[in-house]
Image (cartoon, rainbow over the protein chains, first blue to last red):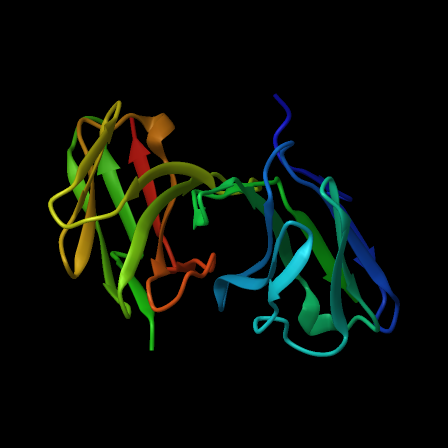
Length: 116
Length: 112
């Protein structure tokens, strides 16, 4: 079975440009999570969705960041405008939610973003 | 404030030399403690979930245990392929949240 799919795997852009990261969760998983990983701050949750609805976006650092989940098989994380401090590895994870309880999360390979 | 602290930050072992990694947590209630393995350039890979003090889980050379304040990941007779960063995460129990709080990780290097 395919795991979580993320694209692109690497993105290099210039400050001020718009960046869009994409994620396809594991089929049948109804929770989706976006994380950011840096050496300084480790792995931080940005936002998560249940059944395509955003539940907690308290980790989104600024209004420059936005995330959408238009259907059960696709989500995007957008940064506009991008800044050098946004450089990090962005992970998407998905999880099955059964009986109202959350289960373990399965991570994608990540997108390494470099903003020059 | 919910917090997860892992120690040591880095650990070097000889092949076959058993050791333990520590994950201490401060959280308002606990709805699960998770261990992940992360190889360079890859996403975290799920290993174990523990829910209550006294619980233990095993997988090959790895064994995870849980108390009310910490968890240990015991590595028995490690091999070079066990080299990776091991991440611990907790799910707070204050509300039915899906949020995980991760520690900074322990980077394990096993030399042949």
